[in-house]
Image (cartoon, rainbow over all chains, first blue to last red; front, side, top):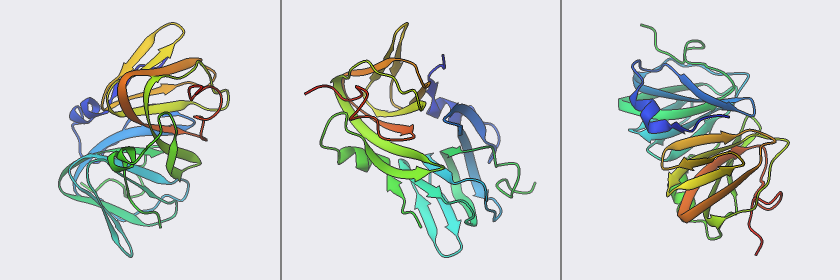
Length: 112
Length: 112
């Protein structure tokens, strides 16, 4: 049986910005946490929608035609194939739900 | 394009216990909110895992061999086919992620 998972504690334990940690899977979807500051690169995922739920700070999902400002408790799904570029002026912490880890490919993680 | 959704505000707007409201879909999964007090009936879902994320109060996921106590920020996935009976001594508010609405069938909603 699965154990319960405390999302804020998992966010506290993250050490690297924009790196996703998989907490659990359900129905083939991964539930992941990440924290970020600054901007990633523009990218899209042709194989999956990417859903964000913010826990701390403000996460701005830049789209080509608008910016979506997400604060604590806000949820937003970027549809598959839609270009986006998340950014945060101060540290933001969030849950992601998607089919696989995307932070280390497709530009979801900034170049170092 | 989807709009952003504030989960606590959607929870505040619920009027009926144990009734799920679908907020959005991503990758074929429904993201739903519900609030509850008291107990539902024992049931299982053979077609889907059911994932809970608690926002307020304590949600106790009774399983046949143990109880899982979930507080704010806690996440737990009941695997498909596993009998469970959620209960709450005081009002609890939570997000559910699954393939379809289950509150009005399979015993996920108490008999009135």
